[in-house]
Image: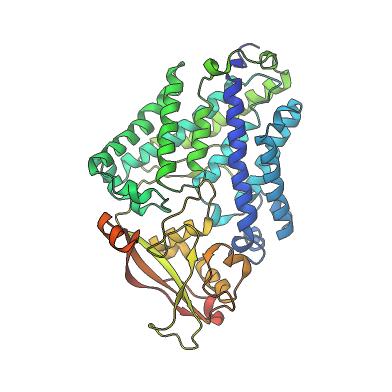
Length: 479
């Protein structure tokens, strides 16, 4: 079955699998460290309540069968340990079937988390990790050559990620067609990074070049992924360069790193790798070849709805069309905000809350807070609460389900919730009241930075949540 494997891609497979395992590692560690406050038994959106309302067929998960915080932690840390082992090469030191089982277990564990994660796990990169992770099960290990069909399927995923994102931009905000979106994006993106201030202050002609380069990378180059080498490698290299630019300019969890990982699978490393190992040239077992062909057929059938979505004028972003997240549609920033608003959460120990009372601000780890604080770099680690706070500022509707429980836990001094924050202004006892204010943020100018040392300038817009005490917190909603 010489047609079935591509021995020359053994190094591309190795790099892809090790990098994918690294992304899995960040995902599982993040889940283990954050789940108790978000979706734990006493969390803001508890898993036990969710699984009572959602049947197994709609969201398959191990936690549909049984849930406890201890079981969730065990699954998350098991996934992290297994991902670390695969990143270190454990999958190449065991028989082919055992390696497939390791990758399959990773996929099942993370699928179980995503399908009970609710709004905290509603991001496109969750589905992307699951889709790439599912294909990794059938990529084999060092005891057989990389299956050609799976290599093509990985390019098909990368194509949909890039081309879908390009189409949603061209169909969406007019500023993409005018090449002006990056006048605003670096300032208004969900979570700026330490270099975002500098990217924002690049000359406007360079911002227009950024936009034009983005269109080329997302609309033209993805087609070249399906051309012969070395053209496909050049296209993949351009995607990698673009993603690294995004890594430098913001915090997008592991989206950029996973896209880079997918692009690496399309690179021909023959010039660097030399002749493939003897094992990579062995014929694949018949059972493995049959299984890969069946999976390929399944993916092609399931690709129908994502393709129809891409060609539709009503294209949607980041949608899964099956409960296993096997083949999905992707996209990002179909619209770009022109101004940035942030929800600032404060507490007071005063028994009578006054507008001019002793209010103290809670600090978050990643999202903008105090104007003098330079944004930090957290990606590929995903700060889920910080990301949802960005959505909360866009519209109170995005926060209706969880913002009341969040303030309730601040008022109760909940340890797990406070661990999600960067600064707790009430270390000795929780506040009596909590409120939230909506501020408009903008990056300071060069002159303002020199004079004040502040990276942000903020202006109060309105009250977001009136002063709330513990007895009223569960029923409170942002306005």
